[in-house]
Image 1: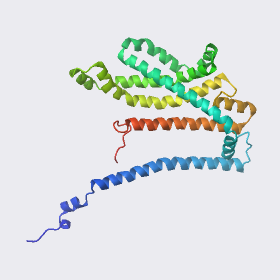
Image 2: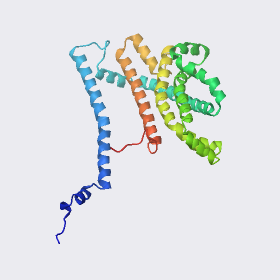
Image 3: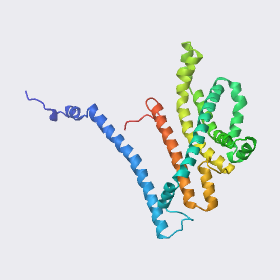
Length: 293
C-alpha cells in the first residue's frame, strides 16, 4: 500500500502552510509599527518640506522681515525673547486650563440634570444654545464692562466657548443608552444609581471624550479672542497681548513667534486629549479599538 505524503494531499498541504497564531500576531505587530511610523514620518516630512520651501523663497527673493520673516528668524526671535514669551505662554495655559476645567464641571453636572429631569432641560437648554450661537467677540466687551477683574472676564469668555460642546455631547451620550439594556436593568430591579453608574456613564463616556477634544481647542480660542478684545497689556497677560503689542510696533518676527506658541499649545492640547481618549476607550469601545487588518 503506497503511503501518501503531505505534499501529495492538497488539504494537508494547506493545513501545513497555515500560519500560526504567533505568526499572525507578529504580522499584525509589524503592520501597526509601520502605520505608527508612517503617521509620524509623513506629516513630519511634509511640514519640514513646507518650512524649507518658505525659508528658500524668503531668502531667494530677499523678502524683508517686516513683511514675512523666514522660519529661522522666527525661531531665533523665539529663543531671544523666551523670557517674555514664556510668561505669556504660562498665562494663556492657566487661563485655558481653568476655563476647560470649569466647562467640564459645569457641562457634566448640567448634562446629568438635563438627562434626569426633563423640565430642567426644557428650561435651561435654550439659554445654553443662545450662549453658544452668539459670537464671543460680541459678548466679550459687555463681559469686560460688567466684570471688574480682567482675568475673571477673560476666564468667563473662554468658559462660554468651551462649555457647550461638553454639555451637548454629554447629554447626547446619556440619552444614547440602549433601550433594551434599560429594560434589562429594570427587570433586575436596579437602583437609579446602578442604572446611572453601570449603563448611562459608559454610554456617555465616548461622547464626553469627543466633546472634550473639541472643548480643549475652543477654550484656547476663547482665551485668545477674549484677550484680543480686552486689549490688555503688561506682564500678567497672555500670548494674544504679545501679538497685539508686536503688531503695534511692527515687530513681525515677534508676532510669528507668539503665534507659533499658540499653535503649538493647541496641538499639545489636542494630542493630550486624543491620548486620554485612547487610554480610556481603547480597550472596550469601537471608536478607539485597534482593528486587526
